[in-house]
Each structure stands twice: as structure tokens, then as C-alpha cells.
Amino acid sequence: MDISFIITVFIIGFVGAFLSGMLGIGGAIINFPMLLYIPPALGVGHFTAHEVSGITAIQVFFSTIGGVLAYRKGGYLNKTLIAYMGISILLGSFIGGFVSSQLPESGINIVYGILALIAVIMIFIPKKGIDNIPLDQVQFNKWLGATLAFIVGIGAGIVGAGGAFLLVPIMLVVLKIPTRMTIASSLAITLISSIGSITGKITTGHVDILPALILVVASLLAAPLGANAGKRMNTNILQMIMGILILAVAIKVWMDIL
Image 1 (cartoon, helix red, strand yellow):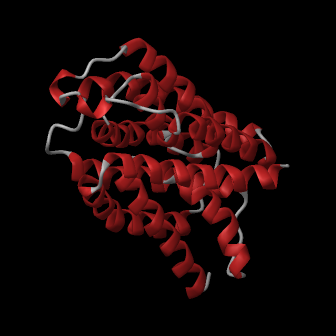
Image 2 (cartoon, helix red, strand yellow):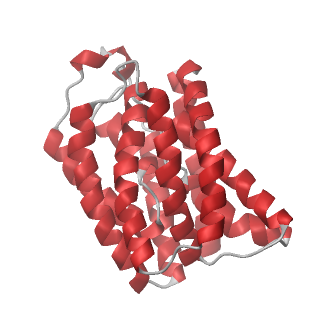
């Protein structure tokens, strides 16, 4: 493993973790395609889809820790939401993590593409008035949230993601959670979810330790910076950035699949 490979992986991890903290996503939606396509394009290395899903599972855990710590003050973390959706997505991600070992690489990529496509559709649905709701008056259907989180967890566990790129649009569109509370709470839920993904990946031997450690270092540095940037940005701009990002990834993944 040469220095150019290490630098490439570090930059990928830094960018993914910064956007993770800023947008309330775990980073896998960004890091999965970047790790899959950028190293071979630059001629510095190559990862299989199984290796990428294992590495991103580790990265998501540490990038969400940094994001949650940055959002711990200000009333943005909804503990009820985190408890219901966190436990459900954890159970789902355990199942998905084990299922992934039975799938071919093309199968993992297809699951990833389907999740990204659903997220794109939901993120661009108009969300009027949700940011006018006071944080201490937020209400939502707990069991609907828990059921959707369980389903997301299965898919997220398969691709080594925390699932936040799907949780965020679900929380905004279906549960009507204000944007900043969605971002902060989704980071905490994704942190819980990533425990299941990591356990599944480690037990099936799909974690390449050194690249994972490089991403961990990058994540711990970048995620708090991204979270602080997100606090200062207009919520409509945050939603737009997230939508464009997920759309670009979905297009790239489906072009390769088809």
C-alpha cells in the first residue's frame, strides 16, 4: 500500500465525513461510490464491492460519533425518535449485514442503487412548513417510524451504510420532523444502526482494516467541521445539496448496473 493510495483514501474519507456531519447522513452514500471508482480511476488501488461495504460500515460509525457530539447541545436530538428508530434500524442492519455475505457483488450494487433511487424521489418531494414547528412541540407516529427504520436497516446493512440517506427523507417527508432535528437525530440513529452493520461485516470477514483506519482518522477530523457548517446554513440549501448529491450517486450507480 503506497502513499498515493493512503492519501486518496484519506481525502475520500474526509470529504464523506464532512458532508456526513453537514447533512446528517453517515457518509456511505458518498464513500461507497468514491471508494469503488476513484482508486482504480487514479491507478492507485482497487476495492471489491464487499470490501467497500465493510470499510464504509466502520467509517459511518466514527463519522456519526463526531456529528452527534457537535449537535449534542441546542435541543436538536429527539430522544424518543432516536430510541424508536434506532432500535428498529439496529435489528434490521444486523439482518442485512449477514445477508450481504450471501449476495454477489452485483446484488450489493443493485440494492445500493434501489436505496439511492428511493431517497432521490423522496428528497425532492416538497416539504412545506416543517421548519416552522417549535422543536419542543414535534409530534410523529412512533410505530410507523420504527417500521420504516427496520426496513431501511436491512437494506443499509447489506451495503454497509448507516441508512441515513434514506432516513433523512423519510423523517422529513413522512414523519414531518424539522430539518435540523432530522439531521441531528439521524446521525444518532445512524450511529446505532452502524453497530449492526459493523458486527455483520466483521463476522463475515469483509473489513479491510488499514483503509478502514485511514477513514476513521479522516472522519473524526471532518465530521465535527461539517456539523458546525450545517448549523449555519439555510435548511432549504441543505436539502438541495443532499438531493443533488444523492441524485448524482444514483445516476452513476445505475449507469454501471445497466
